[in-house]
Structure formats: structure tokens, C-alpha cells
Length: 495
Image (cartoon, rainbow, N blue to C red; front, side):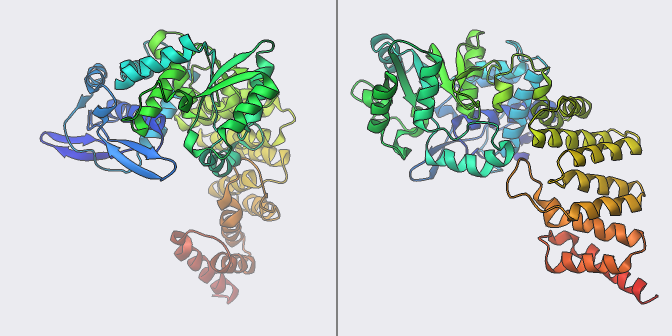
């Protein structure tokens, strides 16, 4: 958003992003790219946030305390953006910029433009943390890799905040298609199965203070069950002088260790793991050896995407043309505004079929929705929605889409029939990408409107009364529905 006013005009800015440091990096990328493509081509740099997962305290610090602002200014100049002085102000979250940055990273990978000279990669090459060459970080790298001979750096996202994130955000989107809530033992077992034979040495990255399971218990499990000798950063406190470091410095130090490792293991759903792969590529031109543990199956799976994607299937795909990737790719392309390409990906996934009927349904529903947006023939659009609905009769989003589209085309009898079918479908208790509004009120609203157009005033009135008294309906629709109910009453009264 346009926020700060400066001496010579407006500048794009936000106050800070509340996520972890890697989320904050992606939001910063989004700020630069929005300024370059949408304007104004002037930005005020946001503050960074130091976040303590134990106390939940967010403390703002100037970005210059963590990154070399001069390097960012040089990058800004190459894309026609000016960094201007000013106080960071505006949105306290910056999520609009985060989503824009993440979309641009994924979009560059989808179009095969995530190379060493892409604007995304150049940005991360210019994002130089001040801790990179600090004595503490250099000493830590020397101890971990040279003195201890550690070969694997393993990110363990097993803290309580991650469990909350999976329950409230990932599960509704991903369902059971990924292993997003593995235990420490599951991660260790997959590591051992992927690197059989011989003793392994692994350095564990996590928020140690926030762990629900004791570190010593995990250490014994690794040693006794899998012949893996693990080291925690706290084990090195005698050698790693971090007494004056804050949570931000410690997080950046963890990141430098991840980038310096011979083999990094993480979850594709973590921005830390994604940025570790992407920034390693930005710095060295090589994606390195990265694996993810959240793919279903007994072993780790090699990461092939340079850190661009969050879905595990895309992160590990060797060929994005594989139709099994179509649903996730369609979502990325749709978010980027490439509706024709998104439609083709959705359609390919629907045609591919397979045992995951829910994903086939979602892909076909997405293809039908975009077919309508792209101006296809009405019969083709309605046929596409009907095909999607038939694929998974326990879901109603496609029926709602068909009813809405048919009504907008003046095909009211068809709209009424689709809406009536949808109302007979109960809201699923679990599933991917469930559109709550469809089941809460939108289908009933379509039915009320369609019955009004087809001369069924009693059905219209009944539907409107339900909408006004029972449905979880946004308030802005109330006056319209009241007017529809009054019109039905007049029809019933013969007026």
C-alpha cells in the first residue's frame, strides 16, 4: 500500500511483517517488486521484528541492524526503485507484500525463469545479513562442520506453534496429502532410511526453548534407535559466544549454518527451508543438496525446485509438466493472474484422474470457474461445472458455481436445479479447500434468487427467511435479501 509521504512524493511502505525472519524477507521482496511494477517507484524500508515464541513479544528494530542497506539500494537502482528515508509506517503485518513476493518466486519457477539473473535471485543476492561474517557465526560454522564433522543439518518443525499452523492453515488446504506433522522420531527414521549404513552426525535446527519434547529424550532416541549423533546449538554454548545476541541474530545464524551444510533436511512448507535452498542458489549458483521430509513415504525426497514452492509435490517434482502437479500449479498461476495457463493446468489434472477424487474435483471445479472467466461458450461452462460436480457428489462448490453462472446467463431453471441439488449436500466435516460460504449461505441465496426468477414466490420467501434467521450471512447482503422477500410476499398477495 502507498503509505509514507516524503519531501518529494509518496512512497510504498508497510510498518513491519509479523512472521519469522524469512517471512519478513519475502515481504520485503514483495515491497520492492510492487514498487517496480505498480508504483510509486519509491519505498521506505520497513522495520524488522524480533519475535520470541515463548513470551510472544514482538520488538521492532531498524532493518539496517540486520542487513546491509547499501547493497539493497544498489539492487533497487537496477529495477528503477528508490529507497527514501523515512519512518516505517502503514500496515502492521505486510501480508499483502508477503503474498506478492511468494507469488513472484513461484511464478518465476513455473515459467522456468528462476535463474541467476532473475530479479528474484538478484534480490536475495543483495540481501546480505550482517551476521554472515561475524566472529560468532564463523566460529560456529568451524565447530559444526570442521571440528565435529557434521554432515547433515536437519530442521525439525516440531514446536507447538507449528502444530497450530498445520491444524489451522495447512490441513484445510492440503488434507492428508503430506506429512506435515511428523514427530522427531519420524524425521530421524526417514533420515536413517535415506542414508543407510554407518553412523550419521546431524545438527538440529529448531526453537529449542519452545520444544514440547525434551532435547535429551530426542538425543537418546536418535542414538539408540537410529545411530544418529545429534548436536543442538545449545550444546555449543561454551564455544559459540552469543550472550549479546538477540532472537533475530540467532535466527540469522541458524540460517547461515543451513546454507553452509553439505546436506539440508527440512519441510517444504517452511519458508526457512525454502529460503535456504533459494538463497544458496542465489549465492553460489547451485541449489545444493536439499531434501524434504513432509512427502508421504518412508524416506526423504530430494528437493528440485530451488526453494520456490511450498507444496511438497511441486518442491520435489523433476518435471512440472507432469499432470499430477496440475492442481497446485493451477493455483499458483491463477494467483499470478495467468488465467489461461491456470485453466489448462487444472484441466490436465482433472483429465489425469487417479485415486485422489477430491483433488480431481477441485481441479475440475477450478477449470470450470476459469472457463467462465475466459468467456467460453455457456454450454461448455455449465457442462464443465456439471462434470466437476459428478466427480465428487459429497461436495457442493461446483454446484454453486453452476447455479451462479447459469443465473448470470439468464438460464434460471437450470440455476434453480443446480442450487437445489447443492442444498441437499451437507457441509463436509473435513476436506481440502472447503468454501464455507457455499454451505453457510451462498447456495441458499442462489436458490432464493433463482426461484424468484422462475415464479416460485413461496420457495423464495422460505429461502429468504432462512437466510435472515438461520444462515451465517455477511451483513451487507441483508437489505437485498429483505427486498427479495418483500417481492415474494407481493407476488403471493397477487400484487
